[in-house]
Image (tube, rainbow, N blue to C red):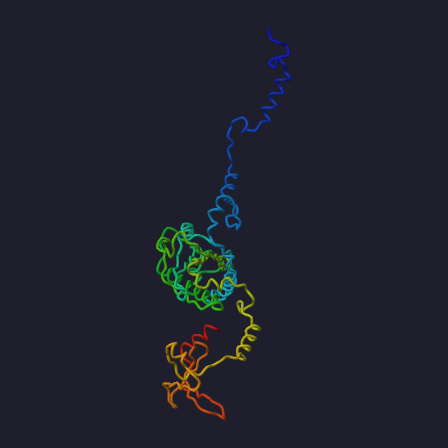
Length: 357
């Protein structure tokens, strides 16, 4: 006969046991918890709602940690802001239409990832930075291509440009886009001009990203996205500069913006120039040089005569420290020894002065 106080017979005990089982977590019951899509995206660091966000988390932040942030080159923002202003004026003159150019964002990206993300069809312009001895990439999307062709060929305003997908670009379209790319590259030269002189020359136009490989896929690059609007038409231009291209002028890009002079201080320049002009320097006139043994030097006495390999008409060498300056002729002026300079400054002295400046 069962005990009356047994839990199997007690309704209150059955109720309490069911409540405890309901309050237990899936891990304590031995059931694996399945993550939903939002938790997976947060873990990996992906957020589809804000793909261009600067702050990354999770695994994606670890993967992108090797990239150099463009914020370490603050002068680039000033250069690209200047490029936007120049393009607004030049493209208005080029299209004879109301053109608005805006800077969407500046980001750092791996070159291989960028090539895989280019929406096709598009035209990729490979250009060479002559003074920097490297290449860059300029991408024109299909919307802007058809808009430029429509505007330059006299399309009516107020109507969207007609797009014909599934066919290669014609020679006329490529020539018109090439003219626009040359205008943009000339504006880029003017944008960099206050910082350094660099000419961007168009090398070739490509429609296949595989033929526009100008760097290794893992190399980091600066990506600048520009938006061009012509009333109800327009599109995007993306300018990509590998960090290897910007390396020769990296020190200039690291400086902070201090006015239109790009970091120059006129007060300090004038003060330094004034001090340099009033600086005293010691100049020695060398008649002759000889190499003798230490024994003969120790045997010298008062009244001994040293024979020099120089005559009264020989030229003497003027030096400042160990740097030869020029050659001069000895003479006398009002009971003082004097020298008359006979030749301009030597190239070594000029190099030393240029290095000092």
